[in-house]
Length: 519
Image 1 (cartoon, rainbow, N blue to C red):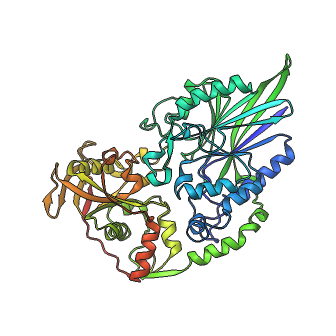
Image 2 (tube, rainbow, N blue to C red):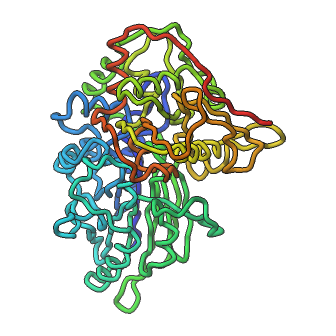
């Protein structure tokens, strides 16, 4: 007997085969997933379909839904229901719009949500329904146990996770796996973990700081009894084995699907795994079945009308033609975002990032579409009280984004592998600073001034940044547990749109308050 396990992860609300522009079609989204799943169900007798988390946030369409139609049925959940998922795991981005929004999405789901290590702080019991499911295929019993990266409190707005405890995923699995093994005696044990790999899956070498955000390698090494580990969060595509555990990670935005086939043979009155194969299926030979999208077409058209609304105009200097150059030398768009953060909070110092290499800035006619495709995360703002030494340490962290190779400035591999992390390089406004890449790491910031005076090591300064950075996210641990002077509950896309609507005309300016040198 053969069982096929299919996994999606990090769909991030991408329903359609394009990002925001209909003419720019990409092989991604639910229509490709649906086609492949339907074909698999025709060809295979036993198919198990699991989503590994981060499904309800991350696209302009979901932003429109949460801002304008949150009382309507959740469109991405509607499509997952139509695709007939067997279960979904709670991802970290499920909390971005608050618990009420997530709970409504769960209530509309025709499949269970799983996570054994997100607990109710009053009962210490799993919060979101059941931690695992049992699926029977004839005589074969399959268990799917869900777990979620416990690093969420380091990123998320505390109001969005109020009343929840995030138990260390490894420690939680060490309790649940043997307990389930003893109680259920499954023929196949699957863990679906919304998290990734902290070590190279082939060499075991550390590929990032072991903060606990990603623990998949540790799970394979320290927990016995797991046959298959479904992973995600890092947006990578991989299929391999670690310590006898078959691992899979299917990518993001519905650009592929993880597939594990398991052949069983019955011996001594018990089903045993005879052979197991894993792969990531890309859509090279798959055509989308857009019939599944018919139910959300009216929603799609309403979203496009909203996105195409012109809310301001500029002199055209806010366009980004090269994101690398925009990070290497101050760009008007980056300065504009920092100034909005300062305007909204009154903070005298600000830092922000270009989140990915798809950022194009603003043209002369600025639409809502321009805002949401450039500022892709639902960040809120916090003003922290930090020392001059904290700012210096943060700038040194920023300086690690660049490396020198043959006297040419390049991006440090740590910010591109195993997952692009351009969002962890900040550019600052309100201070003047110079970074010299020929200096040793940790000593690259050769000058920092505030109001024309050197930054004082022990002096306190107010700095506005997004909530992810304020929690220490991205390796900025110097910001953890600092006093919060101001906390904005509205997200940045709202603030940017409001600013543009109020001002109508935006002048591109650059004060060149920072420099990157190579000697």
